Length: 75
Image 1: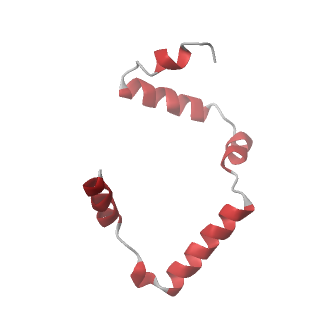
Image 2 (image 1 turned 60 degrees about the horizontal axis):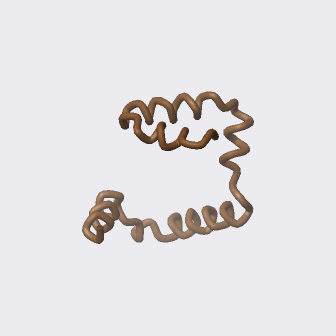
């Protein structure tokens, strides 16, 4: 990326930046997206562990609204 390009792009409005991000994402083909989103074996194992824990203990889940409220209160 040319020097200053990112700085210039960050000056775009939020809507323009979002539109650009979508256009860039959509410029990738399925294989490129899959390659960028590939999980490591460690990440896959951790997700599997969390899913197993949730299935075994569904009552331990915390609703997203509560998580968001706690995060907002800390900020």
